[in-house]
Image 1 (cartoon, one colour):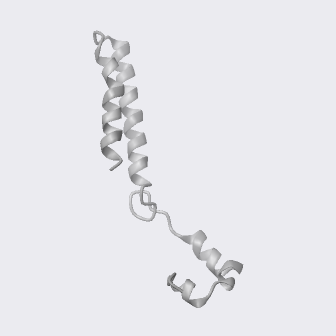
Image 2 (cartoon, helix red, strand yellow):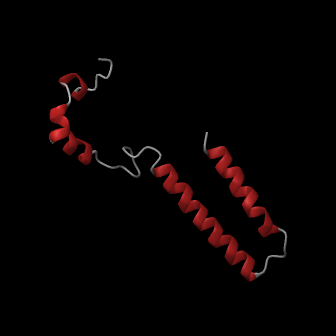
Image 3 (spheres, rainbow, N blue to C red):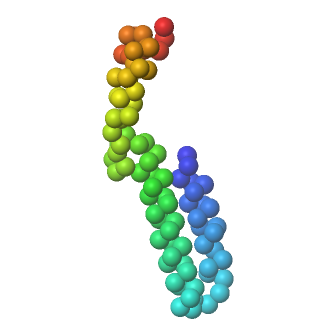
Length: 85
């Protein structure tokens, strides 16, 4: 759902680069813009689900919270993932 507006916006932002003749400066600016946009879109893709590759994060902080005082205050059903109490 996000990708269509992101790519359309990227195309609309790059249109002004094609209005003028392609000089060395314009080609350089367009390549910098393309690289920056690609990196931003990659990081959005990588961290859209932070617990899967390529930007996988381990849930260590959450596990530490459950082992600490917060976990002691929760009921056993909540610790097992049952939220329909």
